[in-house]
Image (cartoon, rainbow, N blue to C red; front, side):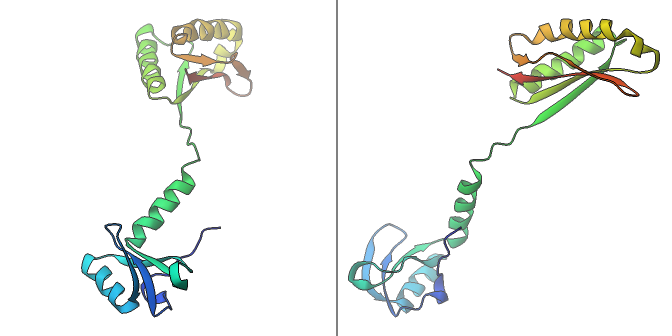
Length: 169
């Protein structure tokens, strides 16, 4: 659970210990004076500790919105976003068109994207599954130096798709 801070008028103490924006500390100053200092600088007075030296709360002159943003960013920082791109082609693709798709895959892998590499078979092409799997394996060899993958999987249905996911090294 995120810690909540008292800011500006939410601070109830009459006197506080104040850490200025330059890092210096002023002890036992009235809250009104602290608010005036913060307003001059266009910042906020944030209560960072309830009990400090002499039993007074410790407050700091800072940009409260920026502090909350940094905390949220740090909290979300542990999550890794995985991007996946998809390239589809058919068994009768021309060599030049296949080379264009392979250049695109190399570009994605250099940017650390995962690539779903799909060979689709439609209509009568579905009878050529063995040839399609062989073609997929030959095409995958082009990415041996920049990526890794598992054995292509064949999914059957109205369309037959041969799928593998290429991960960057």
